[in-house]
Image 1 (cartoon, rainbow, N blue to C red):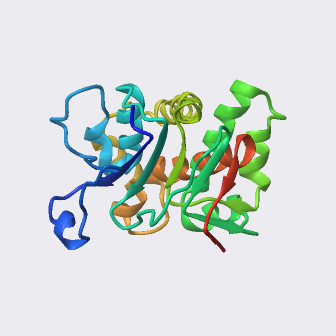
Image 2: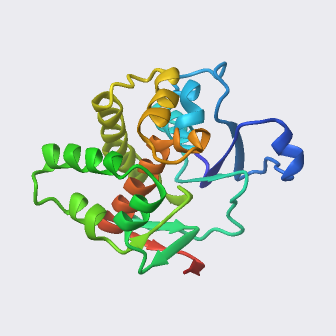
Length: 223
């Protein structure tokens, strides 16, 4: 088993040359929208789930390494450290950034309320995850992290049922055409090609929520 494998997501072959992407003993390139990839995957939803499709593929197909990390073509770890159980190396931590207020300004806040409703149904109305999403002021953006494999499995076992429940709650049913329809229907801005990635934006906050409430995050850059 590899000591560390970092999965770097991209979606267009042109990005390999444009960003100088290359595989190493540690870095593994993964084309997140490659529907021909072997194994269980949701790559047909990459436009909407973004790099979360890579996480799903690694988790479901048990691509194990002692430590596992994720980054993407525009954001790459320049160095990594030995990670203990429950620790998590992240790329950036924003302190004093109200999570809910930031989401409300940038995206459709009803989507976040839907995720909170799902958490309340699963964990009760006084659960720490909903409290964090509503009142937390530490945000770990970009879905870039390194942690031990066992901790990664726990994260995925927590995260994906919430995302898929949100998907079902909004009648999307993993149908690519419906994500764009939803973005056109319920968002107040014109950039539907950006806002159709609502599930990826939610995942970014949910991963941040899990890392802050369940783990010990650290990074080189803290804003």
